[in-house]
Length: 397
Image (spheres, rainbow, N blue to C red):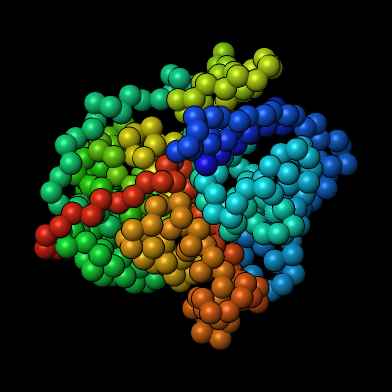
Protein backbone atom coordinates (compact mmCIF):
# COMPACT_ATOMS: atom_id res chain seq x y z
CA UNK A 1 0.00 0.00 0.00
CA UNK A 2 1.45 3.35 -1.09
CA UNK A 3 -0.17 6.62 -0.06
CA UNK A 4 0.31 10.03 -1.64
CA UNK A 5 -0.75 13.19 0.17
CA UNK A 6 -1.07 16.40 -1.84
CA UNK A 7 -1.31 19.65 0.15
CA UNK A 8 -2.10 22.87 -1.71
CA UNK A 9 -2.09 26.19 0.12
CA UNK A 10 -3.58 29.51 -0.96
CA UNK A 11 -3.73 32.17 1.73
CA UNK A 12 -5.46 30.69 4.76
CA UNK A 13 -7.03 27.85 2.74
CA UNK A 14 -5.51 24.38 2.45
CA UNK A 15 -6.76 21.75 0.03
CA UNK A 16 -5.83 18.12 0.70
CA UNK A 17 -5.90 15.16 -1.65
CA UNK A 18 -5.32 11.69 -0.20
CA UNK A 19 -4.68 8.77 -2.56
CA UNK A 20 -3.94 5.19 -1.53
CA UNK A 21 -2.90 2.60 -4.10
CA UNK A 22 -3.85 -0.85 -2.82
CA UNK A 23 -1.99 -3.69 -4.55
CA UNK A 24 -3.44 -7.17 -4.10
CA UNK A 25 -2.36 -10.56 -5.41
CA UNK A 26 -5.84 -11.98 -4.84
CA UNK A 27 -7.95 -9.18 -6.34
CA UNK A 28 -7.65 -6.33 -8.81
CA UNK A 29 -5.60 -3.33 -7.75
CA UNK A 30 -7.49 -0.20 -6.77
CA UNK A 31 -6.87 3.43 -5.88
CA UNK A 32 -8.85 4.98 -3.03
CA UNK A 33 -8.93 8.77 -2.93
CA UNK A 34 -10.61 11.57 -1.03
CA UNK A 35 -10.17 15.32 -0.84
CA UNK A 36 -11.15 18.07 1.56
CA UNK A 37 -10.34 21.65 2.46
CA UNK A 38 -9.53 23.57 5.63
CA UNK A 39 -10.04 27.29 6.15
CA UNK A 40 -7.88 28.51 9.01
CA UNK A 41 -9.65 30.93 11.31
CA UNK A 42 -7.76 33.99 12.61
CA UNK A 43 -7.27 32.55 16.10
CA UNK A 44 -6.01 29.28 14.60
CA UNK A 45 -3.55 31.16 12.40
CA UNK A 46 -2.31 33.08 15.43
CA UNK A 47 -1.97 29.92 17.53
CA UNK A 48 -0.19 28.05 14.74
CA UNK A 49 2.19 30.95 14.05
CA UNK A 50 3.08 31.16 17.74
CA UNK A 51 3.87 27.43 17.76
CA UNK A 52 5.99 27.80 14.60
CA UNK A 53 7.95 30.68 16.15
CA UNK A 54 8.47 28.72 19.37
CA UNK A 55 9.63 25.61 17.50
CA UNK A 56 11.95 27.73 15.36
CA UNK A 57 13.72 28.85 18.53
CA UNK A 58 14.31 25.17 19.34
CA UNK A 59 15.51 24.12 15.91
CA UNK A 60 17.87 27.09 15.65
CA UNK A 61 19.77 25.80 18.71
CA UNK A 62 22.52 23.31 18.00
CA UNK A 63 22.15 21.99 21.56
CA UNK A 64 18.50 22.05 22.77
CA UNK A 65 18.09 22.09 26.52
CA UNK A 66 15.69 19.24 27.26
CA UNK A 67 12.08 18.14 27.65
CA UNK A 68 10.58 21.63 27.31
CA UNK A 69 12.10 21.90 23.84
CA UNK A 70 10.61 18.55 22.93
CA UNK A 71 7.21 19.77 24.10
CA UNK A 72 7.47 22.81 21.81
CA UNK A 73 8.17 20.60 18.82
CA UNK A 74 5.37 18.23 19.75
CA UNK A 75 2.93 21.13 20.20
CA UNK A 76 3.71 22.38 16.70
CA UNK A 77 3.17 18.90 15.28
CA UNK A 78 -0.12 18.53 17.16
CA UNK A 79 -1.42 21.90 15.97
CA UNK A 80 -0.46 21.16 12.37
CA UNK A 81 -2.34 17.89 12.69
CA UNK A 82 -5.45 19.23 14.47
CA UNK A 83 -5.81 22.70 12.86
CA UNK A 84 -4.88 21.93 9.26
CA UNK A 85 -6.03 18.38 8.61
CA UNK A 86 -9.77 17.69 8.22
CA UNK A 87 -11.05 15.04 10.67
CA UNK A 88 -11.47 12.39 7.95
CA UNK A 89 -7.82 12.74 6.93
CA UNK A 90 -6.72 12.62 10.55
CA UNK A 91 -8.48 9.26 10.78
CA UNK A 92 -6.82 8.07 7.56
CA UNK A 93 -3.37 8.84 8.96
CA UNK A 94 -4.15 7.13 12.26
CA UNK A 95 -5.25 4.00 10.38
CA UNK A 96 -2.00 3.69 8.43
CA UNK A 97 0.03 0.68 9.62
CA UNK A 98 3.38 1.72 11.16
CA UNK A 99 6.13 1.95 8.54
CA UNK A 100 3.76 2.74 5.67
CA UNK A 101 5.22 4.76 2.75
CA UNK A 102 3.67 8.25 2.68
CA UNK A 103 4.64 10.69 -0.08
CA UNK A 104 3.88 14.39 0.44
CA UNK A 105 3.52 16.84 -2.46
CA UNK A 106 2.96 20.47 -1.49
CA UNK A 107 3.45 24.09 -2.50
CA UNK A 108 3.94 25.00 1.18
CA UNK A 109 7.42 23.53 1.43
CA UNK A 110 8.54 25.47 4.51
CA UNK A 111 6.10 23.84 6.95
CA UNK A 112 7.63 20.76 8.63
CA UNK A 113 5.00 18.25 7.52
CA UNK A 114 7.24 15.41 8.71
CA UNK A 115 6.52 16.59 12.27
CA UNK A 116 2.75 16.14 12.14
CA UNK A 117 1.88 14.54 15.48
CA UNK A 118 -1.23 12.36 15.86
CA UNK A 119 -0.96 11.98 19.67
CA UNK A 120 0.98 8.74 19.12
CA UNK A 121 4.20 9.89 17.46
CA UNK A 122 5.69 12.23 14.90
CA UNK A 123 4.78 11.32 11.33
CA UNK A 124 8.40 10.78 10.20
CA UNK A 125 9.09 8.42 13.12
CA UNK A 126 5.93 6.42 12.64
CA UNK A 127 5.97 6.16 8.84
CA UNK A 128 8.28 6.26 5.81
CA UNK A 129 7.81 9.89 4.78
CA UNK A 130 9.13 11.45 1.58
CA UNK A 131 8.30 14.48 -0.53
CA UNK A 132 7.72 15.00 -4.24
CA UNK A 133 8.23 18.15 -6.26
CA UNK A 134 5.16 20.17 -7.14
CA UNK A 135 5.81 22.12 -10.32
CA UNK A 136 4.35 23.12 -13.66
CA UNK A 137 5.09 20.95 -16.66
CA UNK A 138 7.49 23.47 -18.18
CA UNK A 139 9.70 23.29 -15.12
CA UNK A 140 10.40 19.59 -15.54
CA UNK A 141 13.42 18.64 -17.58
CA UNK A 142 13.24 15.53 -19.68
CA UNK A 143 15.75 13.25 -18.01
CA UNK A 144 15.25 10.19 -20.17
CA UNK A 145 18.04 11.17 -22.53
CA UNK A 146 20.42 11.31 -19.61
CA UNK A 147 19.99 7.67 -18.70
CA UNK A 148 23.04 5.54 -19.26
CA UNK A 149 23.74 1.84 -19.26
CA UNK A 150 24.44 0.33 -15.83
CA UNK A 151 28.12 0.33 -14.90
CA UNK A 152 30.04 -2.65 -13.56
CA UNK A 153 31.44 -0.53 -10.73
CA UNK A 154 29.51 1.30 -8.05
CA UNK A 155 30.88 4.86 -8.26
CA UNK A 156 30.63 7.23 -5.29
CA UNK A 157 31.71 10.83 -4.86
CA UNK A 158 32.20 12.20 -1.34
CA UNK A 159 32.75 15.96 -0.93
CA UNK A 160 33.90 16.91 2.56
CA UNK A 161 34.73 20.01 4.59
CA UNK A 162 35.64 22.36 1.70
CA UNK A 163 36.32 25.26 4.07
CA UNK A 164 38.34 23.28 6.63
CA UNK A 165 36.23 24.38 9.61
CA UNK A 166 34.09 21.24 10.12
CA UNK A 167 36.20 18.51 11.77
CA UNK A 168 33.13 16.28 12.10
CA UNK A 169 32.74 16.44 8.31
CA UNK A 170 36.23 14.98 7.90
CA UNK A 171 35.28 12.15 10.25
CA UNK A 172 31.98 11.71 8.39
CA UNK A 173 33.76 11.20 5.07
CA UNK A 174 36.14 8.65 6.61
CA UNK A 175 33.19 6.82 8.23
CA UNK A 176 31.37 6.67 4.89
CA UNK A 177 34.48 5.46 3.08
CA UNK A 178 34.75 2.57 5.52
CA UNK A 179 31.03 1.74 5.23
CA UNK A 180 31.01 1.89 1.43
CA UNK A 181 34.09 -0.24 1.00
CA UNK A 182 32.86 -2.80 3.50
CA UNK A 183 29.36 -3.03 2.04
CA UNK A 184 30.19 -3.11 -1.67
CA UNK A 185 32.95 -5.33 -3.06
CA UNK A 186 33.21 -3.17 -6.16
CA UNK A 187 32.90 0.39 -4.87
CA UNK A 188 34.98 3.03 -6.59
CA UNK A 189 35.02 5.88 -4.08
CA UNK A 190 36.40 9.27 -5.01
CA UNK A 191 36.46 12.18 -2.63
CA UNK A 192 37.24 15.86 -2.79
CA UNK A 193 38.29 17.46 0.47
CA UNK A 194 39.28 20.91 1.70
CA UNK A 195 40.73 23.15 -1.06
CA UNK A 196 40.29 20.38 -3.65
CA UNK A 197 36.51 20.75 -3.40
CA UNK A 198 36.46 23.74 -5.76
CA UNK A 199 33.59 24.78 -8.00
CA UNK A 200 35.41 23.74 -11.16
CA UNK A 201 36.18 20.25 -9.88
CA UNK A 202 32.73 19.68 -8.34
CA UNK A 203 30.90 20.94 -11.45
CA UNK A 204 33.06 18.68 -13.63
CA UNK A 205 32.20 15.72 -11.39
CA UNK A 206 28.46 16.51 -11.51
CA UNK A 207 28.62 16.83 -15.31
CA UNK A 208 30.45 13.51 -15.76
CA UNK A 209 27.39 11.36 -15.02
CA UNK A 210 29.67 8.74 -13.47
CA UNK A 211 28.28 8.47 -9.95
CA UNK A 212 25.54 6.42 -8.34
CA UNK A 213 25.99 8.30 -5.06
CA UNK A 214 27.08 11.91 -4.39
CA UNK A 215 27.46 12.95 -0.75
CA UNK A 216 28.24 16.45 0.55
CA UNK A 217 29.41 17.14 4.12
CA UNK A 218 29.81 20.91 4.22
CA UNK A 219 28.07 24.26 4.76
CA UNK A 220 24.94 25.18 2.84
CA UNK A 221 22.22 27.79 2.68
CA UNK A 222 18.82 27.55 0.99
CA UNK A 223 19.54 27.01 -2.70
CA UNK A 224 23.36 26.82 -2.54
CA UNK A 225 26.31 24.73 -1.32
CA UNK A 226 29.48 26.27 0.09
CA UNK A 227 32.64 25.01 -1.65
CA UNK A 228 36.30 25.91 -1.13
CA UNK A 229 36.20 28.91 -3.46
CA UNK A 230 32.60 30.11 -3.25
CA UNK A 231 28.92 29.20 -3.38
CA UNK A 232 27.63 26.60 -5.84
CA UNK A 233 24.13 27.78 -6.75
CA UNK A 234 21.15 25.54 -7.50
CA UNK A 235 20.86 26.94 -11.04
CA UNK A 236 24.46 25.88 -11.76
CA UNK A 237 23.78 22.39 -10.45
CA UNK A 238 20.62 21.94 -12.50
CA UNK A 239 22.38 23.09 -15.67
CA UNK A 240 25.27 20.59 -15.51
CA UNK A 241 24.07 17.51 -13.62
CA UNK A 242 24.18 14.23 -15.55
CA UNK A 243 23.34 10.70 -14.56
CA UNK A 244 20.89 9.64 -11.88
CA UNK A 245 22.75 9.73 -8.57
CA UNK A 246 21.37 9.51 -5.08
CA UNK A 247 22.30 12.91 -3.63
CA UNK A 248 22.81 13.59 0.09
CA UNK A 249 23.65 17.14 1.21
CA UNK A 250 24.30 16.72 4.92
CA UNK A 251 24.48 20.43 5.69
CA UNK A 252 22.47 22.99 7.64
CA UNK A 253 19.43 24.39 5.77
CA UNK A 254 20.22 22.41 2.61
CA UNK A 255 16.61 21.22 2.33
CA UNK A 256 15.04 24.67 2.40
CA UNK A 257 13.80 26.91 -0.42
CA UNK A 258 15.14 30.34 -1.32
CA UNK A 259 13.52 33.24 -3.16
CA UNK A 260 10.23 31.61 -4.14
CA UNK A 261 8.26 33.47 -6.80
CA UNK A 262 4.77 32.63 -8.01
CA UNK A 263 4.42 31.36 -11.57
CA UNK A 264 1.60 32.89 -13.53
CA UNK A 265 -0.75 30.77 -15.59
CA UNK A 266 0.21 27.38 -14.19
CA UNK A 267 -2.66 25.19 -13.05
CA UNK A 268 -1.80 23.08 -10.04
CA UNK A 269 -5.33 22.57 -8.86
CA UNK A 270 -6.10 19.04 -7.65
CA UNK A 271 -7.08 18.18 -11.26
CA UNK A 272 -3.60 18.99 -12.57
CA UNK A 273 -0.86 16.47 -13.28
CA UNK A 274 1.41 16.01 -10.25
CA UNK A 275 4.58 13.97 -10.66
CA UNK A 276 3.14 11.90 -13.48
CA UNK A 277 -0.21 11.22 -11.78
CA UNK A 278 -3.60 12.69 -12.60
CA UNK A 279 -6.03 13.35 -9.78
CA UNK A 280 -9.71 13.86 -10.30
CA UNK A 281 -11.61 15.51 -7.46
CA UNK A 282 -14.16 18.22 -8.32
CA UNK A 283 -12.64 21.26 -9.98
CA UNK A 284 -11.24 23.93 -7.69
CA UNK A 285 -9.52 27.24 -8.40
CA UNK A 286 -5.92 27.08 -9.58
CA UNK A 287 -3.33 27.41 -6.84
CA UNK A 288 -0.09 29.32 -7.27
CA UNK A 289 2.93 27.09 -7.84
CA UNK A 290 6.29 28.56 -6.99
CA UNK A 291 9.40 28.92 -9.08
CA UNK A 292 11.69 27.56 -6.42
CA UNK A 293 15.41 27.98 -5.94
CA UNK A 294 16.21 24.92 -3.87
CA UNK A 295 18.82 22.21 -3.98
CA UNK A 296 16.09 19.56 -4.05
CA UNK A 297 14.53 21.11 -7.15
CA UNK A 298 17.93 21.49 -8.85
CA UNK A 299 19.08 17.92 -8.27
CA UNK A 300 15.74 16.23 -8.98
CA UNK A 301 14.98 18.16 -12.16
CA UNK A 302 18.61 17.60 -13.14
CA UNK A 303 18.06 13.83 -13.05
CA UNK A 304 18.64 12.60 -9.49
CA UNK A 305 15.97 10.14 -8.30
CA UNK A 306 16.42 11.07 -4.63
CA UNK A 307 17.64 14.08 -2.63
CA UNK A 308 18.33 14.37 1.12
CA UNK A 309 18.68 17.79 2.75
CA UNK A 310 18.27 19.35 6.19
CA UNK A 311 15.51 21.72 7.23
CA UNK A 312 17.50 23.60 9.88
CA UNK A 313 20.94 23.81 11.56
CA UNK A 314 22.16 20.60 13.19
CA UNK A 315 25.20 19.96 15.37
CA UNK A 316 27.98 18.55 13.18
CA UNK A 317 28.61 15.49 15.34
CA UNK A 318 24.89 14.67 15.57
CA UNK A 319 24.47 15.10 11.80
CA UNK A 320 27.36 12.68 11.28
CA UNK A 321 25.90 10.06 13.62
CA UNK A 322 22.51 10.28 11.91
CA UNK A 323 23.91 9.89 8.41
CA UNK A 324 26.13 6.96 9.47
CA UNK A 325 23.05 5.18 10.83
CA UNK A 326 21.28 5.94 7.55
CA UNK A 327 24.04 4.55 5.34
CA UNK A 328 24.47 1.51 7.54
CA UNK A 329 20.81 0.61 6.94
CA UNK A 330 20.84 1.61 3.27
CA UNK A 331 24.00 -0.37 2.46
CA UNK A 332 22.55 -3.26 4.40
CA UNK A 333 19.81 -3.52 1.78
CA UNK A 334 17.02 -1.36 3.20
CA UNK A 335 15.00 0.82 0.80
CA UNK A 336 16.03 4.44 1.16
CA UNK A 337 12.90 5.67 2.94
CA UNK A 338 12.97 2.82 5.44
CA UNK A 339 16.70 3.41 6.03
CA UNK A 340 15.99 7.06 6.89
CA UNK A 341 13.15 6.12 9.25
CA UNK A 342 15.42 3.59 10.97
CA UNK A 343 18.14 6.24 11.30
CA UNK A 344 15.69 8.78 12.71
CA UNK A 345 14.48 6.34 15.32
CA UNK A 346 17.99 5.22 16.19
CA UNK A 347 19.21 8.80 16.48
CA UNK A 348 16.37 9.74 18.80
CA UNK A 349 17.03 6.81 21.14
CA UNK A 350 20.09 8.40 22.65
CA UNK A 351 22.08 7.43 25.66
CA UNK A 352 22.56 10.79 27.38
CA UNK A 353 25.87 9.86 29.02
CA UNK A 354 27.63 8.54 25.93
CA UNK A 355 25.87 10.71 23.35
CA UNK A 356 25.50 7.67 21.08
CA UNK A 357 22.24 6.03 20.04
CA UNK A 358 21.10 3.39 22.50
CA UNK A 359 18.83 0.98 20.67
CA UNK A 360 18.13 -1.02 23.84
CA UNK A 361 16.27 1.75 25.65
CA UNK A 362 12.96 3.43 24.98
CA UNK A 363 12.36 6.73 23.25
CA UNK A 364 14.13 8.75 25.91
CA UNK A 365 13.83 12.48 25.31
CA UNK A 366 16.54 13.90 27.56
CA UNK A 367 19.49 15.02 25.49
CA UNK A 368 17.47 14.93 22.25
CA UNK A 369 19.13 17.28 19.75
CA UNK A 370 16.35 16.83 17.16
CA UNK A 371 18.88 15.85 14.50
CA UNK A 372 16.44 13.06 13.65
CA UNK A 373 13.81 15.65 12.69
CA UNK A 374 15.99 17.76 10.39
CA UNK A 375 16.24 15.59 7.23
CA UNK A 376 13.80 16.12 4.38
CA UNK A 377 13.76 13.42 1.72
CA UNK A 378 12.62 14.16 -1.85
CA UNK A 379 12.03 11.44 -4.42
CA UNK A 380 11.45 7.70 -4.43
CA UNK A 381 11.42 6.21 -0.89
CA UNK A 382 11.67 2.69 -2.35
CA UNK A 383 14.98 3.46 -4.09
CA UNK A 384 17.78 0.99 -3.37
CA UNK A 385 21.48 1.33 -4.08
CA UNK A 386 22.99 -1.07 -6.60
CA UNK A 387 25.22 -3.77 -5.15
CA UNK A 388 27.83 -4.77 -7.73
CA UNK A 389 30.20 -7.67 -7.08
CA UNK A 390 34.16 -7.09 -7.37
CA UNK A 391 36.99 -5.33 -5.41
CA UNK A 392 36.79 -1.81 -3.94
CA UNK A 393 39.08 1.14 -4.42
CA UNK A 394 39.32 4.75 -3.36
CA UNK A 395 40.70 7.82 -5.07
CA UNK A 396 41.80 10.54 -2.66
CA UNK A 397 41.85 14.13 -3.93
